[in-house]
Length: 135
Image (cartoon, rainbow, N blue to C red; front, side):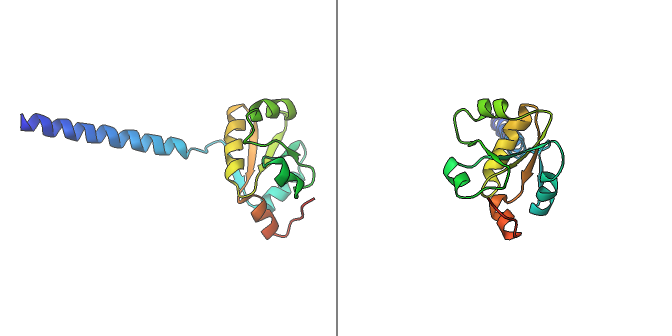
């Protein structure tokens, strides 16, 4: 009986460990999302066929944004609907936020919708550190 319990506990432990590893790796999967530095992002902005997307709140956007960016708040209930209305799948979407966290969330959503997305690593904080201007 003890032997059966030991095998059962060992099996349960292995199953739980496998589930944990699978869940952790799934949460960190950014296979289709490219994140670039501020200088690379600036180069991408100058390319043809791109759309610049600021996913911060309207207040944050009003306080200063990268010239040419449209604003769709990723925390809005209708982010996906607005994105599909405003963004073209024929363009590369250049996405940013304050620190890079919300834009990565938006990039995942947009990538799942079929958009090609480039994320600004470090967000507007990194942009300003590199002396790029805001509007």
